[in-house]
Amino acid sequence: MSYLLEIEGVGFSYGGRSVLHSATFRAGEGEFLALLGMNGAGKSTLLDIVSGFRRPETGSVAIAGRNQRLWTLREMSQQVSHLPQSIHSDLPFTAEQLVGMGRYPHTDRWFESDEDHRFIQQAMQRTRCWAQRHRLFGSLSGGERQRVLLAACLAQNASTLLLDEPSTFLDIEHQLHCFTLLREEARMGKLCVAVTHDLNLALTYCTRLIVLADGVVAHDIPTSQVHSDADKGWLALFSSRLSIGSTPAGTPWIWYR
Amino acid sequence: MSSPQQFSFVARNSLALSVLVFMGAALVLPWVGAGPISLARVLRHEAPDYDILVQLRISRTLLALVAGGALSLAGALFQAMLRDALATPYTLGISAGASLGAVATIAAGWETFFGIPVTWIGALAGAFSVLVLVIGGSFKRRQISAFSLLLTGIAINSVCAAFIIILSSFAGMSRSFSIARWLIGSIDATSYSSLGVLAAVVFITSGFILSQARSWNLLAVGERWAASRGVRVGGLLGRGYVAGSVLVAGAIALTGPIGFVGLIVPHLVRSRISPDHRVLMPCVFFFGGALLAFCDALGRIVMPPAEIPAGAVLALIGGPYLVWVIRQRIPVEEI
Image (cartoon, rainbow over all chains, first blue to last red; front, side, top):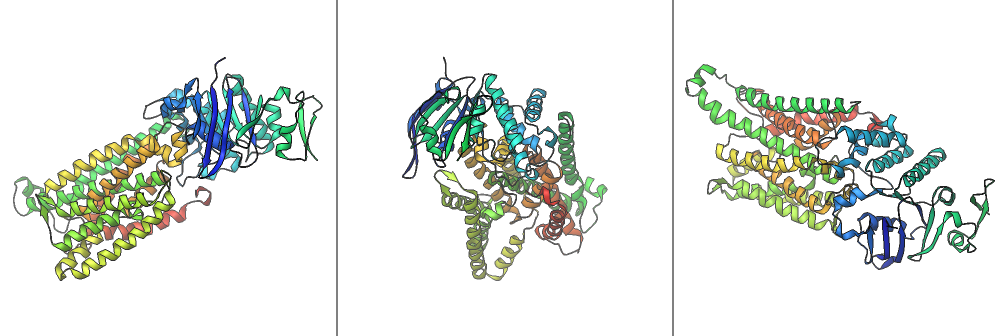
């Protein structure tokens, strides 16, 4: 099997504070990974490294079977798209203009082609923000913004989607919609890696849980094996007050004591 | 602009309009001035009409068009790079550095150096010293922080202002008068050779800036946003700062520091036409040039035979208008 993403012994520190020590995992087409961990466990840092925003101090990252350093930035951006937690801009772009920027890596045309517009429309309809396309980004609510950013990510049509807390500002309906959409993307042959703190969303929609702790991948569990996995140590990493049970449908569910 | 076709329609129309206004200003404004000029006498090359038109009015209008375009485009560029609608070469201190350099050459009484006006050399040297200081001062882990850039700019503005005051108090009466007049920002008739050099520099630099319009769009949203869409951010920012400083120093050396045009024109085009730099930047260049030329022409006719410098006219019209525009904005549009 060929892997879309291979992370080998990646280490990174901010100043003297080591965040990642030696993180290693591989993932391929059709997978939807939940990247879990406590605050400061290095989840966002790891996404930054895969996106190319930061260079790992040790170890290596390979994208689609080729070392990340051998890709040009433009080639990388056709392979990998990154959903930021938020954007801070003083300048008044409309939702549609922001989503349209996802098409830039694919063409040198001055203005978007009809094909680009189809991608933009499709992405905005799938994330349910097409009705807001003419609104200024800054005038949108937190949830609407998040949907626009997700549409921008989809319009980029990369094979690997890195999502930094994609559901944080969404209401429950849209959280479920967002994760359903990402699972659809994975089923269509993409690789999605989402940072999240919502363990039940992760258990319900993701195919695999990657738990970062102490700078390494402490646990790497397919969600289908969460029940049979005797070691419940990964749960204790988050809080001692968590227990795992089942929904009436038999899927795992985490409840709080 | 509900469909792609309609969008490019709006874009194309605004672009065409801005070019028309620019051309119209170039054709009409030289005829505006204190004394009437007879076309018949101009065609017969008769003095003084022919000389007034060709030697004074045309060169002055062209200078206003080129300098206004350059300063406005530089404003739009810095706003995109710093993601801040208030960033201009003025707020960054680049304008102040160029002014200090130019004022130093005026105070020293130098005029030309191998046919090049020395204010140019002074302005360029000033602008680039500030650029090195400002960017050097705000580099953090190989990244430029917009916030410290603006803060450094404010500090540099006051230091340069202090030096300018010192220089003009040591300069003699007449020189300190020409410094004061230069500082207001006036468009004076200039030789066609310096105009030609300025135009060439401005067109090449603006061409480079315009060609990167898609990248400015991305950068205006965020550096990571740009990097994750294929832009090499560090290199592009470096080239952007150099290009912007060349535009500012080139224009300011001949006109004096006219800061306002770089704030008001991008703001209006962004809110009225489009924030998309592929449309915004060419529109800003053409409208900015036309606006400065218009203010210069207005300054010639309101109180003849006295002339009000273009910088003062621009501030008098533009200031209240900008305040009015900002007050008109609906709160939700405030980003």
